[in-house]
Amino acid sequence: MARHIVARTTDIPPGGNKVVAVDGRDIVVFHVNGEFFALLNRCPHEGAPLDKAACVARLTSPEPGVYQRSRVGELLRCAWHGWEFDMRNGQSYFDPARVKIRTYPVVIEDGETLAKGPYVAETFPVHIEDSYVIVET
Amino acid sequence: MSDVIDRPLPEAEAPAKNRLRIIDCDVHPSLHARSDLNPFLSKRWQQHMKTFGDHLRTPYIGTTPYPRSSPLIARRDAWPPTGGPPGSDLAFMRKQHLDPLDIEFGILQVLDMFIFSQQNLEFGAAIQRAVNEWQLAHWTSREPRLKAAILVGQDDTEAAVAEIDRCAKIGQYVQINVCPRANEPLGRRRYWPIFARAQELDLPLGIHVGGYGGHAPTGGGWPSYYVEEHQSNAHSVAAQLSSLVIEGVPERFPRLKIVFIEGGLGWIPATTWRMDQHFDRFRDEVPHLKRRPSEYVKEHFWFTTQPIDEPDEARHLRSLIEWVGVDRLLFSSDYPHWDFDDPRFAFKTPLTEAERARIFNGNARALYKL
Image (cartoon, rainbow over all chains, first blue to last red; front, top):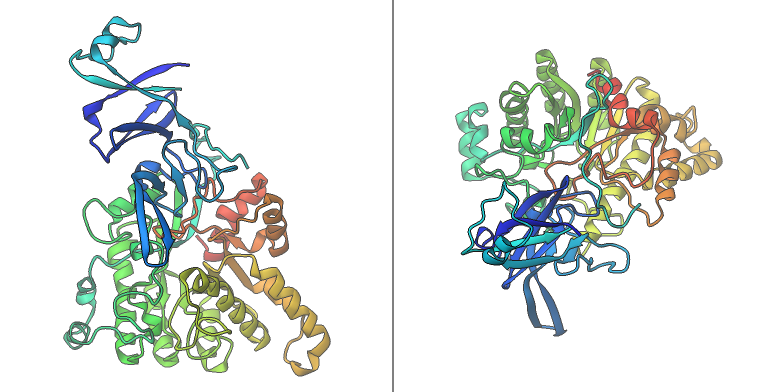
């Protein structure tokens, strides 16, 4: 599994995202509720860019007139046809068994650790005081 | 179809002379603001627009009777960075749609202010003229890939014919558009002067779904939900196909070409089969028809593909395309609306190169003489 340093944690504000090109694929990295999630930046339906998706909440209702929001910002609603996916694992909400977005593991490592490791690509400026988002493909 | 798309986008373009460019038969431009029309309106109608606005047979002003999926029924990524509604910024339309999808031509379908359904007929005539002029001034003269249609509200047939004649003299338009929801079914004789003119000018008649004709949008009455109302697009155009064929429009106007836009495909075989079945049994009722209805459909009618049907099994879409006929289909995207079809991914069934060439380009090129 290749590891790619794609951003500083501070590059992606909470609620925001960043699209990075990794081996010819556009991968979108979301920052939500203190976590980072990486997904292929294409809806499996017609290929819409997911960085433009609405980041919405899970909405549940135990009875008429009462509703609860949870996991605010963790669910994607595609910008085109409104297909909904769980950012955490790429699963669709309407057909979780069949339709999903490819997801990629994400780790956060601080610059000091990276500086010691084998991933200091010459083209990447490394500031060891920062933390970095690493996507594994 | 793979359930997970994880292939990279195609890298290299095919060589320029071989590549299949796209003709998109349903592109929606928008007014930035209604005042965009002022240069094309007399003081009297500018004042009217400002003071009274629309008179449509619909319960709300400034919105649709059914909340529709997303603001201004648009793709959420289609709002121009410069402001204004989706479809209002030519530079952004080029950047987001025309250039990346390699659109060779886009046929404009203006829905703003729904000129077809204005109940004040004089105001309707004034804004239909203004919208037709605006299409040239703001769009086609600035972007040669875009082609305008002559919009006419068919319920004032006389004004419609006058507007067609005015625009035909200018010569920049590739189609005459009427509406599938008017006061009467489209095949009725009151509308025939429009069809006569379309045949004379050899301009296809375009019929884009939508409109407020004052009737419930389904034969069963008023829908309760948007998802239910959305079905009525297909009901309306199925009714209009039957009306045009059975009233004898293609028989009376043998060179008329008619395009249904945004009605989808699934309803076409069923409607045509049933017309044939009943024609075979009851032809004495309609002796003005000399041929089976399906023969008129196969010669006179074209259908744009969006919203493409998505049956659970891809082979069913394949059958549907064969039943309708590859030569009847015109690709359309509906950009920038939310139910947009991407020409690269919308068809979830394999097509041969020859079929793709016809659906995505050749059929429209021949029909619109592009």
